[in-house]
Length: 589
Image (cartoon, rainbow, N blue to C red; front, side, top):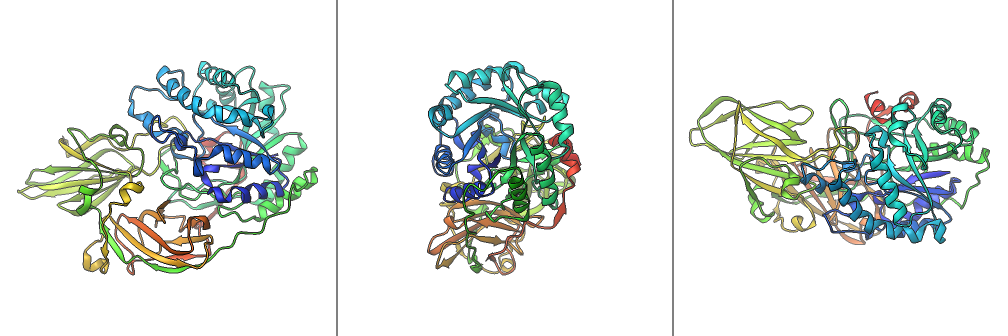
């Protein structure tokens, strides 16, 4: 009985709280993906510290009496940026992902040479808690390269992985044909239709133990869509059916956590759909760690089948409302570009990955000669959202899901054209996984391509934020900042560091930092209206909030820290769409 908790979506100070709540519900195992892009954010530079301290998470789970299932596939999906693949892979336009391409496999091997030796001592065969390791993730939903799967399997074996190896796929003919290999245990992923799903699995594996590796007991949210929930009674009933069939189960998710920073992924079935900052997933344990009625319903089924609580249930973590915080200092983006980094001169509009950038924003600037009247500006393949400025004034927004041209009038003396593009998250599932960011094709005025660009990468990492110059903010209307991107800063005092929720009423769209930690994106489009701020990110005394607001400050230039979450307008999920057909068809539903 396993539940998914991703260490990289939870601040390390709360790992023990979440794991104990898993045990208290009667679970004996925790499952986690391993996100390659977290551990090798820049090629050849590895990180296994802080929120990326995988070994500490695994050891802690073992110390608390839990077994661990590790899914270290190069690809993880997980509604995580690029499915866990590092963005720098896209700098090589010829490299093919998730197949037997020697160039790709060389990168995987280097990563595994660093990762797997960290896990080997933690295997159950060496006295540790790890009982199973995944070879690849839902590969049958993507490809059918058996040689690739066998290469990954052999690589794990050669690096001394000697616990159970497994694959996980949706229970359809296509997925099981493409995603499984002989000699490796197979599991299936689904959210309902237990008899039908396990029945299809039995057509391929007659004697192997049954396991639902991903029991989708909730669902995730996209921007511009409602917040999804699933009835706890329905979840408990499906669990009862699985346990009655003698199956093992891994709840996906038991505790979802947060897509901190720029790590949210996106889907692209019919159109591009970026995932929100919260990964609450309507899981049994909320994003902020509280139990839910779904938790209680699951606990009752667990008891019915003989799974006793492994420990007492920890007390809820305290939450606090710190009130309104004035963001009294501001600094517009464009006047301080010279301090923000090194621009690149290019004939063409290069995407982020070609200039060594992974996340954040990228600015394309050029001079347009005039006069031009009655013409239209076309951004050919914008990924994902562009704000367009002519002569220092906003003229419109072009979005990947709404790639409309913009009317353009250029005076005889010409004008500077600036296009600020936001990477809103790379596609994490399906055939459109290769998702370069920025402007991937070019910029046209009518049919005429524009050349000779200055490209300024704006990853907005800690080093770049430290270069921003602020001044006391006047009223937004007096400053004529409407539609202009700018940084806003304020501070508040905390007598104690408790969980809180940051609201953005009156603000439009942007990114928020607390004490230098990137909480993630906010957007008035919703559904999410407040970002979760874990207490360990705060400190007793003075705390700093910074926003990078894209379209102009709220009227009072203030945000609010409240003790109430707000994931947005709710839409119930019918269990029938979380069925055996897989994530892509579920997305269409």
